[in-house]
Amino acid sequence: MKLLTRVLPFLVVVGLLAMPAFAQQGSVTGKVLDKEGKPLVGAVISLDRQTVAGHFEVKTDNKGSYFHAGLPTGPYNIKVMVNGAVAATGTARVTFGGTAQADFDLSNMAAAPQGISKEEQDKMDEAK
Image (cartoon, rainbow, N blue to C red; front, side, top):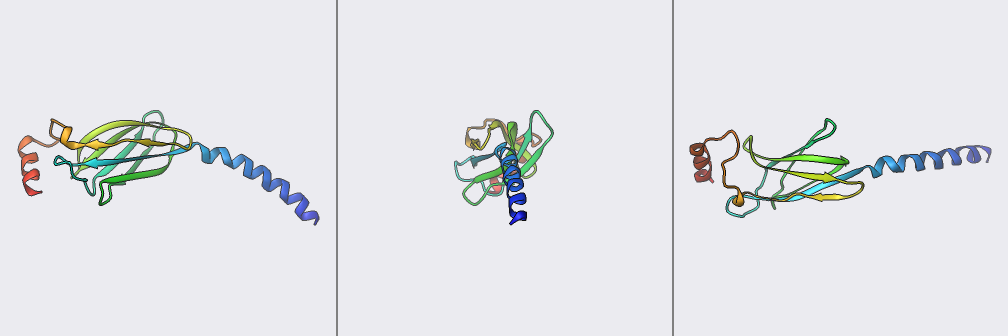
């Protein structure tokens, strides 16, 4: 019984101190549509923290959706990567326990992805 009276307060204090650490995380979710307005499958979503170094990646699923949890709070630069090239960019702010929404519709993008010539982009479009 003496052990319980000594260990229990310690566990309560540790639990209370650990809660704020978990609360300082959030998530980012969104959907990516291709140039025809269909879900873009397998695109790499690159999440880079703006204020402190941190790089995270996730891929879109068969519905063009993505979700990344456990991200430290703060502002992020987001890139949609298709075949290794940047197809779209955006930003999001992750808040304590919140979920930031960042959707991308490539049919609204006028320019070809960075690093790809117009001819290469046309060939990729034809291959689809």
